[in-house]
Length: 420
Image 1 (cartoon, one colour):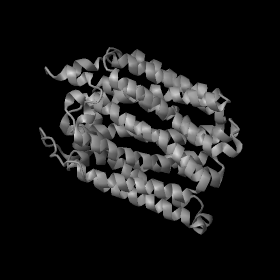
Image 2 (image 1 turned 30 degrees about the vertical axis):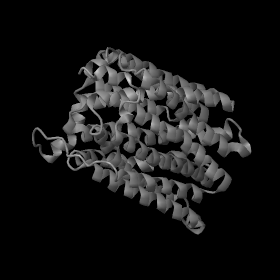
Image 3 (image 1 turned 60 degrees about the vertical axis):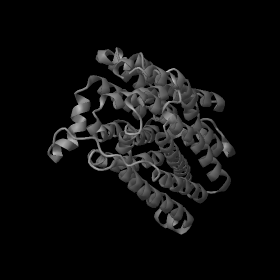
């Protein structure tokens, strides 16, 4: 413990570990490919259908298999060596990406079957993500020591948000200046690079299991653990509803055309606005690498999620591109605070032998809520209108934050520095 203060003060401590650095780079290329794919699919579906509801259906198509497989995938992550799972799931994701590339090359196929081939492939990507979601946090904890969990989560979040800046911009440029096929081709190349980098990582043994459990108990152990922990459950609930009701990002292609009246520049504006939250998150992440938000983590988490909800309301009411960009930039800064605190809570409070299963529950709460949030946004936009639906989502987020803050005193008093 005598070396702990110096390592905590070093904002680059986790990156100085070779295996973690390779892991972050591999995930960077994987996330960048997925981000480009997400933007290209969204723009392509909207061009084919001109229906905001269909954009929401993209998220639902991916969320259904993700949720269905999560508990089983968490069990697998705690039962088999995690590097092998990462490689196999990434390979499956790579195959899906190449299939999207091939489908868009065949214009007759899209004319004959419409958007269904694209939705079918996105369903398959949900299967791959269902296995990757629980195994990544569990594997990361084996690459860094406990006192660097917060620092590692910060840099992993920064890397992901960097892809969320570059991905939408590149996706918008590729489909706007060229075509969807090129976008999917670039995506496939990036995922291939990530796949190869994962082979450079170690293949550590699984943590020892204290007791053997029947399969049904192992599958549900993550839920039982989370629901018995007020702090973890409250943190997951906050992010769940913030993402579920704050899914305005999915509606950016619609806002670019119908609210901001971008005209011929709609594709460029879509990419620009999609990158804004991640740009804000990166700036905040760099600040948090030097000044971690862990000392008054509970208070900081509540403020951050509330700020995110208010930003969604501001975005809905904005009619100027650069004001919308600034608001989304701020929303990303707030969101990254909550992401890093939540990830650190999960890393510090979860027993080593349960990390896969608890991460699976986190994936059900948070990972799938991104896609379900997209569906909710599309559905609300259809029946309430674009602007009212996003205002409604922001208001719901603020109300839920208020309720959780009142009902979870342990979260309000949380100080993660005392848990290291």
